[in-house]
Image 1 (cartoon, each protein chain N blue to C red):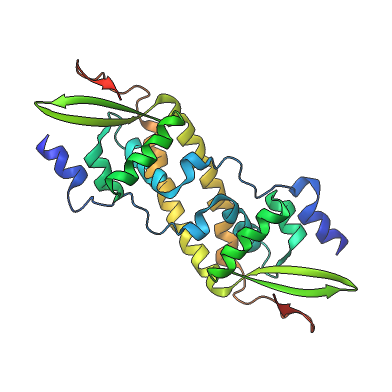
Image 2: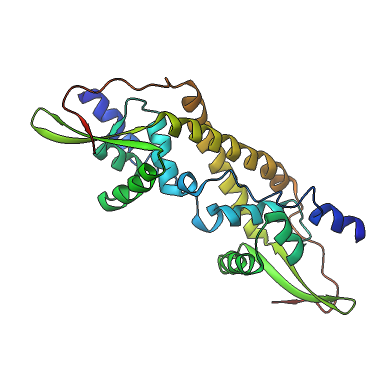
Length: 134
Length: 134
């Protein structure tokens, strides 16, 4: 017991699974989709293209773009194509760098967890008598 | 333009980056840490061990455990070790299966995005005159 306790709560392991690198601005599911779309299109995507790729409503996409812009991850441009007003969204240079770092952290999560999840026994040990579901 | 538009908003690509497999119960950063801790400990972790590994407060850990329990991902047991009351948290069988599926989806995200993010040009094309930051 003593040994196990040190292993799992000692200094070396403290915060081992805190994943501080998973910045919430990038980690939120819809924003992750937006960033992944944009990274595949370095010259930017129009609002309607992004909306389609991410299956978001106008309102949701706008709200998430506000968060990404306030975090300095994307830039939003307004212009015209012929007479049609257009909105173009691109990753910033800093956004691209931070997205790469985020993806590397995500890769570590998968590498931490997936082998253990796949190889673990499907049934846990029986608990001693007297233990009850909370 | 016509070709590009079809490529990025056509049916084949619609929702391409929606990532529906990223269930919010599992994807939230703190809960991802909790699940990764638990998957490495199939016989469960005590509340205090989990709190240390994930660098969470009592209140935050309790709140996230409620979400995970309500989603059927973990089970919480109460018992005694000697005279000390203990709380033990374990992944459910279904929780383990769903966590593996989630991790596989995360792996697809990284595989989608990381090569593009690393190889993309650091500067986007200049926009035509008349475009302005929103």
